[in-house]
Image (cartoon, rainbow over all chains, first blue to last red; front, side, top):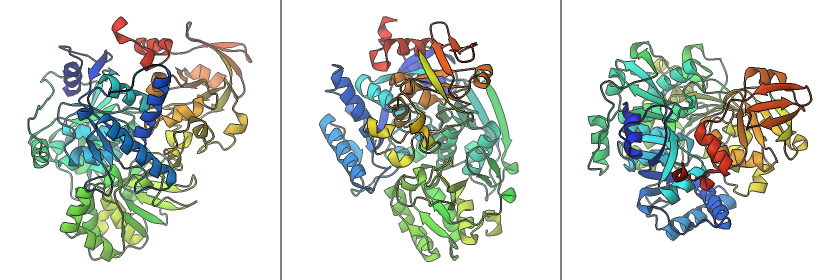
Length: 423
Length: 163
């Protein structure tokens, strides 16, 4: 069995599973945020009316909650959702609630790794599509909707069809100007928006061994944009070190068997990788930066679970150091812990000296919700994950997806720019 | 199940256009319904009637996991989506929450069915009848688990232990 089959077999109490088997797997961790949490509450209300008891969760110690989409509260309705979420965690005895304005908080997927909320080998589900991110720690990490999360909260398990697995092998270390974001954009461009649909996308090879845990998180994060059920990397010493630093102990490092089966293997050479973008209006509409259209950008956005981890900010700072931005540029670290490290290591000074606005952790502008949304006809280069029509604001705005390095270089020139031009 | 078709002949209709991100804070189902398809078709509300079906291409419902998407469509009266394929979270949200039926169709149905056609869906026979054009197409059968959850009326009414 491969790693995902082993995790799902263990979770469902079976000695083995194979693709297309339907299993009810026990869940080790479940996450919800200020959008999916109130959504789950609505499901609970519906269940109560049907006479189904929602008095007790199956195990509140396995539940954790993030405030990220509409924080700092965008308006009265989002403020009320935060109150609802707080009442919810109080009522059900959920202790792990990362509240904004009270120390560590941030985008749920970033908190999942920054706070070691999820462990290798876990069956982890979250009420958000980018839950796939956390598969980089060696967990089966999968996004679900409100009804399914409500089901997990009350029953502790959920059904899955065991996915077939596409294995993406990356050979060799990436060049300095190429980031994991470029690799995943290249892959999505090759296989399409539904190229990984219902499947696992597993990453391995010497290029992945060389990669930091944060880079692997970027890869797994955007498996969602290829339609994948989950993304995953087999855990290694880097993952153990990463999680140990964050207080984790007792590792169950599940890896695939030597005769593990994959339905397809894709191979990429790191030395051939180039900085990439996705043009409007689809993540699979990719090209190399050298072939980017010559558009006048209005904004550069460095934020989100995809593109505002510490190493993302570090990469952007390397370019912005001693330079001034030519277009509106916003940097929003994805969690307070990252914000703090950016302050301690001088990154915030580099950003502010360059003229960048540094904001608080939030999903806000990435999903066109608040705090930096785009006007009609505005064009943005962004380290985020989607560029469908209206994704980041007005339906007639445009978003180009890129790595933090490309977004920073483009902030300096006002055009889509290869970081090599400025390094 | 009978209804009329609203056709969006394109692929990758994503949840950002089915219900834009600014409405994620809204959890009132009736209010969500008033914003359905706002990112794609401002005339949707003047067209849609109780019992209608939407017909579209590949990867319908891709993008975010927001359950708001099937909720908004179902509370406009949409009973089924006929598409060449579906994104996985939209698909399971539609079924597990018993909001609407996601029907996978083949190219002949996609090409043959037009805006406004009256359609009869018979899931017991995996058959789609085009009453307007007097044509019949096959639908892809539901997988066993999906069929059982639909028959039960949603995930909470489905009892896996009785299998």
